[in-house]
Length: 162
Image 1 (cartoon, rainbow, N blue to C red):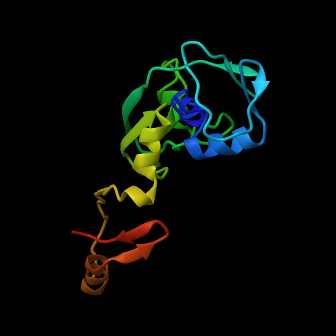
Image 2: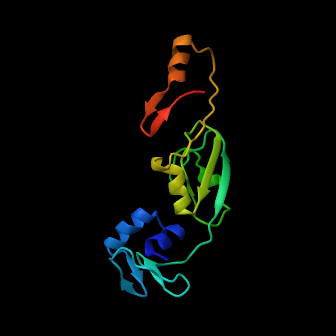
Image 3: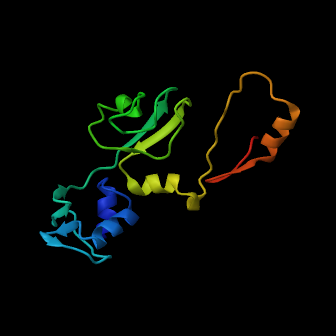
């Protein structure tokens, strides 16, 4: 298995970030610093360290969370508002959200330690369609409704109503 893939599957980081860490000399295999990309390892035999800590292979964990309103999609510890960390505190494995929802939005979140899956969900190059349903208080005038139907370009792609 390639070293960057191992680090990603162990929940350390994405493959791309693993390549950066390898080049910077943050990774050791069998007590030797590895700076070359493309190195292969045997996860059952080789000892991999990242910044001085031994990295163990992890079984992938997948959590589907119905994020309630008024929680931050954050795993930070020093937030002023409640975070999803509170909702997954008993999981026992470090997982990351594959995407995010705004504070006042509720809906499906996928959390995982599988960096490859998270990347496929998040990265625009995979063009994974995402559907959001919004409920609006009050009345929407015809002009605004027409604009919504035509769509709008956002930072991460085109969005429109159905």
